[in-house]
Image 1 (cartoon, helix red, strand yellow):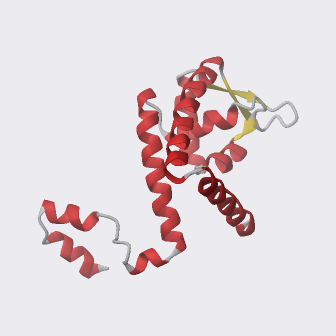
Image 2 (image 1 turned 60 degrees about the vertical axis):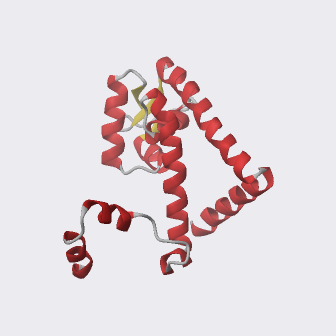
Length: 165
């Protein structure tokens, strides 16, 4: 690892950019499923982030609004699991969203120690706009890979997730 870091210190800016690119297809790292999944996730999120930036919203905020759009109210723990964020990051994002009147907190009537998160009317309107952008991203994927391949990929990923739990 130290050798790698020393190498970077001797490279010019253009050379660093070239080194920072993802590995080529025949690189040993691309043999690993975990790498391929991470690379696919990065690219799909990058594309979705570009679309959502039209509304000035990060992907994680859209996920929060999407989960809360069911109207059921979710604890911070449930929400963290559902939107794939750690608790401190989620708390900071929720605080901003409360300030922006997109979501609000309500004390859980069954357990007064808990707080439930709900989406506001303003959050619902934003979520609707964001959903149309997310749908356009899915349509792009469907056009690129076809219905059958995309549905098969979804089934395979769901199966992988289910068997990993």
